[in-house]
Amino acid sequence: MARTRPTAQKPLFILNGPNLNRLGKREPEIYGHTTLAEVEAMCRAAAGERPVRFHQSNAESEIIGWIHEATDTGAAGIIINPAAFTFTSIAILDALKMFQGPIIELHISNIHRREAYYHHSYVSKAATAVIAGLGPRGYAAAVHAMAALIAP
Image (cartoon, rainbow, N blue to C red; front, side):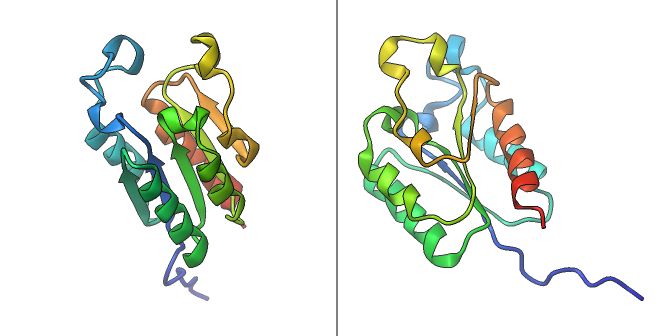
């Protein structure tokens, strides 16, 4: 008997916060030389056939809107690099708490090796898992980890 492939997989949302559009130029000694477009390509390759909704914004409200969209459409999972909003945004935390699926918080650098103000994450309170310090390759690792979390 032939196996049938699911007709529509739920998308994976990958959300990026402020200044990540400057990857490759911004503090390369911390964040590397990989651009956000290259990160997106890595994520899509790692996701295989699963649809990916990849977004970046410097505006907190836009990120919250995408979290609401992921919640309302029943997305498979959210991978979020909230950047500076990690340490300041209770509004993003509140939006993430409404999402019923797995959430991976992602950071390119190891935030725990940095200045003290980088050590407290509001997002971690809603996250299923946290990946930090793997550089841009952490995104592909997060996609693979998410696949394991959402596997039937």
